[in-house]
Image 1 (cartoon, rainbow, N blue to C red):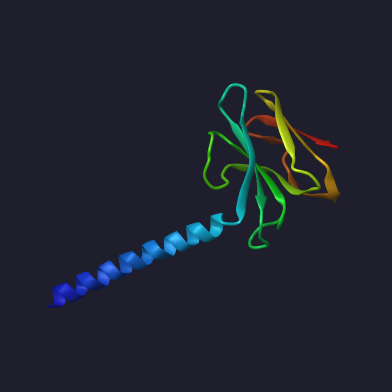
Image 2 (tube, helix red, strand yellow; image 1 turned 180 degrees about the vertical axis):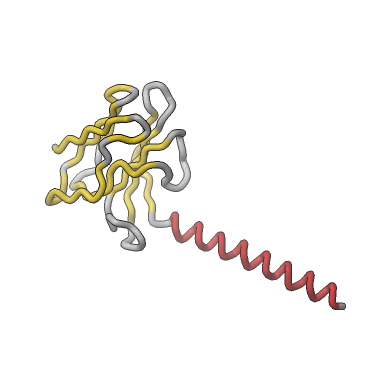
Length: 129
């Protein structure tokens, strides 16, 4: 009888941990909307933009984020944030070469929260429209 109770408690704890993990994963990814993505010319890096639809735990609430990553990811935003801020339009980005990436957007009142100058050996060039 004691073994049965212990097994029941362990199973309940395991199920609770799995449910908590699922809730955390879902609630943290629900606010991201994928906008655009592209790979570097040599295929080693990828860049992807997202609109963030919340003010929870981010330094550019309801803003646009651009991530640079060492592999092409379709899941939640991952990698190095190379831009976070507010554009009046959807930002455009394009590779000038394997080591240079251009980001272009029309800023809302000059609001840039993050703009990396270099990440993963790639120089970031920012252009305003």
